Length: 317
Length: 291
Image (cartoon, rainbow over all chains, first blue to last red; front, side, top):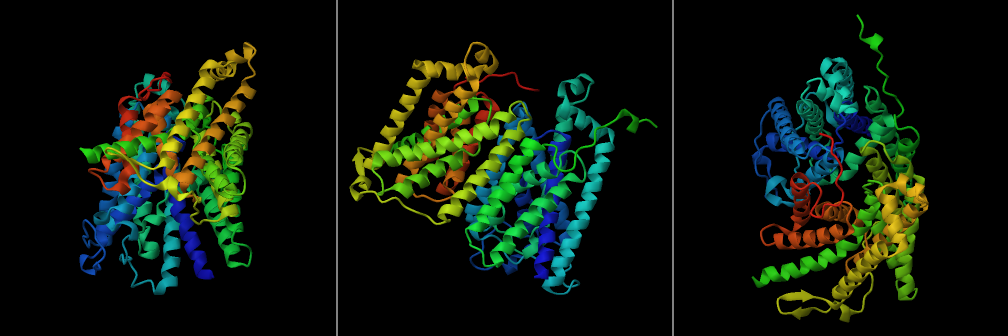
C-alpha cells in the first residue's frame, strides 16, 4: 500500500510540472493550450526513441529509430526537439491571428493528430502496444522497485518546486511583466513598442518545453511508453488543476495538482480497493473532477490560490 | 476511378450522419460564441436512450425520447452554467464544457457500463445495395434521408417562422433583441433545447447504424467540430456543407492514407481552413479579431 503512495506522489509531480507549463502559457501570456498531452507524449516518445537499445527490441516491436543514447544526452535532445516543435506550432498559430479560440482548437488538433499517429502507425513507435523496457537512469544505485518509486517521487517533487520557483522568478522579470500586460491588454503593449508575436512565441515555447521535459521523465515511472497514457483526459486534468488551484501564480498549479490528482484519483482507487460497487467509481470521478471544475469556473474562477494583484509599490526601490 | 466514386458515396453518407450534430453545435455557437465540447456526450446520450428503449417502446417514442432527454440536459447546461459565462475569457466556457462532458460521460458509464452495445436491426435493412459504383444499405440510406428531412425542418424553423426570427435576433444581438421585446433568455433556451434534440437524434442514428459505447461522443466530437469550423461557425448551412465536405474528404483520403488516420485528415482540413479562411467556407460569423 505504501508503494502506491510514492507512485501517487510521482503522478502529482508530473501533473504539477504540466500545470506550471500551462501556467506560463495561460496564466502569464493568455494562451489557451489544449494540446498539453501532445507535448507530454512527444517528450515521452522522444525519450523512448533516444534511449531504447535497438538490440533489445523484440520481433514484434517496430520503431522508426532506437538510438540507445545515455540519459542526460537524450534528455537534452528531447528538450531541444520539444522546443523546436513548440516553436513550429507557435509560428503556425501566429498565422491564424492568434484568436484565443483558434489557439485552443489548433493545439487540440495538434495533440489529437500526434496521438493518432503514435497510437495507430506501427512503424513509428510501435503503435498501439507502445515501447517497453526503457532504461531507467540510476536504477542500479537506487535499489529495487519500491526504492525507485520513492526516488522518482522525490525527484519530481523537487522539480515541481524548482519549476514553481522559476515561475515566480519569471513573473517578476520585465519579460514576465510584459507577458502579463500583453495578456490583459495586447493593444496597449503593442502601442508601447513590444513585439507581441515574439512575446507569445517565447511564452508558448517555454511552457511547452516544460511539458516536454515532464514527458521525458514519464518512462521512468513504468519503463513503458504506451498510447493509453496520452488521452485527452490528461489535458483536461491539467486544466482542471490550474483552474482549481489558481492561475497566474506560482503556488496555484501545485495546489491544484495535489487536490485534483492526488485526492480524487487516489480516492477513486481506494473505493475500487474496497467492496463498494464498481459503478460508484465513475460517479466519484464525475462528481470529483467534473463538478468541482464547473463549480470553480462559476463561483471561484481565480482558483484556490489567487493571483496577487500587482501594486506599483512592489516595484519601487 | 470506380473505387474513388464508392468512397465518395460513403463520404456523403458519413457526412449526413455528421450533419445533424454539426447543426446542433452551430446553434449553440451562435447563441453566444460558446463552443460546447459536451455536445459529443449529448450525442452519446441519444444513442444510449435509443438502445435502452429499443424494442421496449414503439419506434416513434424511442426517437422522441432520444431527442427529448439530451434536449433537457442541454437546457440545463445553458441555464445553469453557460448563461453565466458570457463575456469571460475564451478558455472559460471551453473548460466548463469539458467539465460537463466529463460529468456526462461518467454518468453514462455509471448507468450503462463501459461495454459495446448493439441495437438489433432487421437484417434486411443491412443488406448491401448497389447503384453502379455506389454501395450502401437501406438502413444508411433511410438514415441519410431522415437527416436531410431534419435539416430541412430546422432551416424552415429558423428562416420561415416567427420563432426562428426571434432566435436569430437573440443570437446576433441579445441586448437589442431584449429591447425590442424578445425574451432573449427563453428564446435562447429554446434554441439550446433544439440543439440538444438534434444532437440526440444524431446519436440515435449512430446508435442504430453503428454501435453504442461510452466513447462514441468523444470520437465524434472533434469530427463534428471540424465540420462546423470548415463550414463556418455560425451558419447552419455551413455546418451541413462542412459535414459533407469532411465526410467526403476523410473517405477519399483512405485511397492514400491508412484508415485509422481518417480523423487526422479531418483535423488537418480543419487546421488548414482555420489558418487560411478563418471564417470557414460560409462566412457568417465575422468579428474583428485581436491581432
